[in-house]
Structure formats: C-alpha cells, structure tokens
Amino acid sequence: MAKVEGKSDGRPIVLFLCVHNAGRSQMAMGFFQHLAADRALAWSGGAEFATEINPAAVASMAERGIDISGEFPKPWTEEIIRAADVVVTMGCGDACPVFPGRRYLDWELDDPDGKSVEEVRPIRDEIERRVRDLLAELGEQAV
Image 1 (cartoon, rainbow, N blue to C red):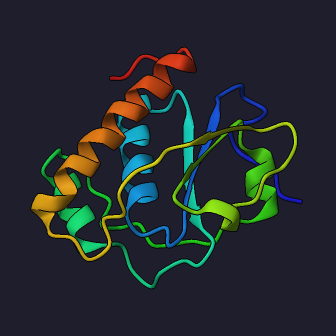
Image 2 (cartoon, rainbow, N blue to C red):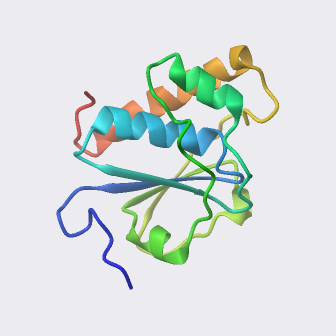
C-alpha cells in the first residue's frame, strides 16, 4: 500500500465525491486547493466518472482565477476514501461508499452537467461558500 501524503504530516485530507467527477467535485477541489494552499489536501473522485471535465465548470472557475482545466475525472478507490479525514458527497446517493471512522458531509447542489456558464455560476458560488465554511471548521484560514 502506498504512503498517503498528508496523513503522516498532520494536514487534513478532504475527498470530494460526485457521480461523474466532472463538475461539482472538481470545482470544490479547485476552491479547496486554492483557499487552503498547502495547509490541507483535497482529492476528488466519481463513481461513474466522465471522460472530461465539464467545460462550463472550467470556464466558471477560470473567472475566479482558478484553473481546473488540467484536471480529469477519476474513480474513487477504497484506499483514498479510507485515507480521507472528511468525505464530501455531492449528489451521488448510494453510489458513494460509506466507511466507518470517516466524517461525511452531503452537499445537495444542482448538477452543472449540460448547463451554460451563466447557469453554473450560482452552483460555483455556493460551492465556494461551503468550502470556506469547511476550511473554517477544520481550523484552516482561507488565503
């Protein structure tokens, strides 16, 4: 089993999960990485991951100066979930696994799939608000 970066050095690890790992979870990870800098780690994954990141999500994040264009949808693994301190699920229901000893948050958010940049902006803004709240709960100040 590979050493999981973050656990041994005390940084909290947050895993963002949604069905396709192409919109909500990617935006959440982007905000988390940007706002936490190197004080915490963020990962994302999906149960039925897509082939590419939602272009409207990429464009809406670019408006905030956060580039998620280099990301790609990834599957979650049991090892990744067990390594996370907090698992944030977004619309994946029973498709997202639950393991004992993890803190789970379920964020009900509209799915940006098939939406325009204008329609994605409110979703993006709500994700940013929730990420800032999560960082505060973790004791990490947003940059």
